Structures are given as C-alpha cells and as structure tokens.
Length: 435
Image (cartoon, rainbow, N blue to C red; front, side, top):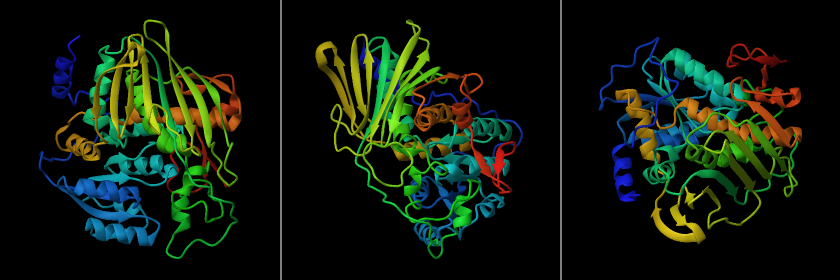
C-alpha cells in the first residue's frame, strides 16, 4: 500500500468531516464573508480566555467576558480587550451584536448555556465534555438542528493535522483490521483535602456559579478547577482529560454510535479527600460492527500515578491484525509492523488555532465542522457511561444506542439524565427539578 499517496490524499481532504446533525433551517446564517469580523462572548474566563486569545488572531472581536468570579471576568476583559465584563451570561445572550459564544464554564453549565445561546440565535464553541450527562447531549443536538447554528466541541485533536493523518492511516488499513483500541489517562493529581461549608470569597457570585445544578453550601475545595471531582458539577477525570483520548479512540473506530455493552470498575484507591469520582478506572466498551461482528475500546485511568504506558502519560494504542499504532496528542505517533518493527512516525502537538479556525470558517462560509455536536455527544457518552458504572458499582451495563437508555437497570438508567434546581432560569425544558 502506498502510504505516501495516502498522506497526500489526506492533506487534500483535510476538511471532509461531516457537519452531521446541523440543519440550516429556521434563522438564516449571518451574512458573513470569509474575512468578516465576528463578535464573540466568552463564558467562563479561565479556559475561555485561552480560547479567546486564539480567536483574536482570526479577526474576532470579544465583546464580553462573563464569569461569576469578578476578578476573572475583569482580568480576561483586559487581556482580550473586551468591551464588557459581566457575571450573568444572559446579558451576553441578549445582545444582538454577539454572533457566537465560547462556553468554557464548569461542566454542569455546558449544556444549559449552549441551549440558551442557541435559543438566542448564537453559534457555540463548547468545551469538552459537551455535556454533564447523556440526556443533555441529546438535547443539544436537537437544539442545534432547530436553531440552525454551528455548535463545535472543543476536542482539538479533530483539527490537528498530525492526528488526522494517523486516523487516515488506520481507516485505510495501514495496521490491518482494527479490533481493539486503548485509551489511557495516567498522571498525578493533587489531594483536594477535606473541607466544611464556608462563606464564598468576596467578588464570587456563588448562586450564579451553581446555576441550574442542585444547590449545595459553598466549600473551599469545591471551587475553581476542583469542581471537576464533584458529581453535581463535574464529570471526573474521565470527562476532564480522559475524554480527549476516548474521542480519538472512537474516531479510529470510524465514529460509531454508542457501545452496546459496558463493563468495568472505578474506585477511589489512593486519595483520602472529598473527591467523589474514581481516582482509578478500568472500563471496556463493546461496539457492534466490523467484519467480526464486534470491536473493543478499553479505557484506563490512574490520577495518582507518575507512570507512563508506551512512553506516554496520556495516549492511545490501536491494535490491528497487521500492526499497531501508538499516539500521543501532544507528542506524535509511531506505526509498527508485527514484532514491534517501527515503520514510520510523526511528531507534533495539538493545534488549537486550527480548531478555532474551523469553528469560525463554519460560521463564515459553511466549512464542515471537525467536531460537531453529535460527534462530541457520542464521545462524551463514554466517560458518562464509565462514571455510571462506578457510581452504581454494577460492573456491567447493556445500553440501547437508539433510545439512549440502560436496559433492565432502573438505577443505572436514572443516571442517563440528572435532576436540576427547581425554578432556576437555566433549567432545560422538560427535565426533572427538585427543591
């Protein structure tokens, strides 16, 4: 097989990913040409400020920085030369001059903010994982169709040329028939300790920050970044870092629908602190399809260990019948023949500017999205399913991709969605609330 020819083809076909669920109905697209300046609002000013800086290099004006932490909002406003720093995202949605928003909030706000933005006619760049739970992802797909707006998920691997080339090699049979993919997340996180409820810091609007999630008293180890480890706000490290590798793994399998069988475990084996999610997980997802009827995706994480696999803390390995390929999204890839004979390799790093450029080009000219909301939803479902196993301790689940329901297990199936705070303005329509 001529892999030089394949690489040439891949460079020419670098934007062939399908837009998928987006249907341009309802409101018309903005009358924006390829070089027209777009106006953006940044929701969440830690990661959001980083994405905003990339967009500033691509003929974008930032009108708003929005964060319940006043210091963060003001700092981002100055860095991005924005017009306004606000705490309440509704001010951003209400401004007709804003074309698009970056949703870089904690996970529990990703879907509600996206739904509100779409209702207001805005395009959305939403950070990974796109949702807090599986039901929210489906609501986002439906809302994007109805609004006729671009929704891109911040899995930057999808726009990175080095990774796109590796996926092309796999899809064209460079390692034979792909039977199993492994994704791993191995790193040392910090102990968040034990804390008791206390008063929020000055300048931090805790009520706005909690938003539609169930209200709980503020405590210091459930705040900036440490919110990742709490059920009502985050999705654990499977949804934080692991989703990057899980997305690449699912991409290699051809972007299939949801898995049908999930088995594995997740536990806290190391940390003695208030974290609620597992610090150690090992989960196998079985997908139907392929010449042999099924394929496996294996996910492993240890967030207490300074160890590497295949030379990588976080990475992927793709096992085929005629070889294997090892990939690190911030390192590169190597392709091996049987008996680990190195055939070729490529070094590279994540290309964040290419991903934001893809989002902006989709708005300006209708370029195909590399990580549309349906792709993001199916990849985010994997950490959600892994966390559901850990929370119930079941060890295994059967999942129906068509209905997105867990079969014959009401307790697990209840975790497909969530319960929201009763009466809050950001609660998605038709979902359950509690007082």
